[in-house]
Image: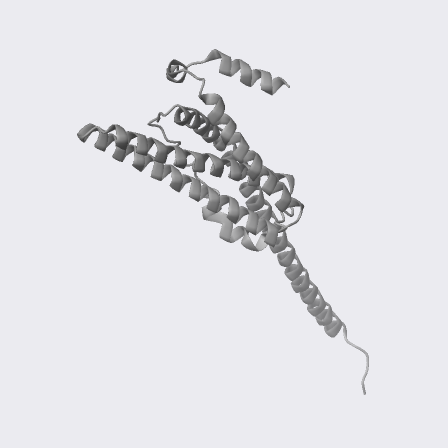
Length: 239
C-alpha cells in the first residue's frame, strides 16, 4: 500500500532540500554582507569625525597664536585689523546624521558640543570683522579719540572672548581624544572638576598675557619676522 520511495521522488526531495539550503545560505550570506558593510561604514564615519577633530585642533593653534598677539596689542591700547579665517567642519555637517546611530550618548554630546562651540567661535570672528570695518569707516569719516578708545576696549573684550572660546574648543577636543569611547560629561564629577580648573587657569593666563605685554614696544609688534620666536618654538618642541 505504502511501498518504497521511487528513485524519481528521492531525486525531487534532494532537489528541494538543496534549494532550501541554497536559499538559507544566500540569506545568511546577504545578512553577513550587510552586517560587514554596515560595520565598515560605521568605522569610516567614526574615523572621519575623529580626523576632522585633529584638523580643527591644528587650525586652532594658529587662532590661539593670533589672538595672543591681539591681546598683547590690546594691552598697549592698540588694535590690529586682522581676523582668523573660519574653521570649517564639513565632514560633521554632512555625515553626523549618518554616524548618529553608531555613536553612544557621550560621543554624540561631545561632538555636538565641540562643533557648536566652533560655530560660536566663527560667529565671534565675524563680529570682530564687522567691528573693524565699521571702525575704519567711522575713523575715515570723522576721527574721534574718544570713539577710538571705546572701540579698542570693545575690540579687546571680543578678542578675549574669542581667545577663550578657541582654548575651550581645544580642551574639549583633547578630552575627547583621550576618551574616544566614552567622553563622559559628569556634572560635579572628575571631568567637571578638571574643566573648572582649566577655566580658572585660562583666566589667569589671559591676565598674564595682558600684564607681560605692557612692556613690549610698538616696534616689536610691527616687526613681521622675529627669529627669537622660532628659536623659542624649537626649544619648546625639543623638551
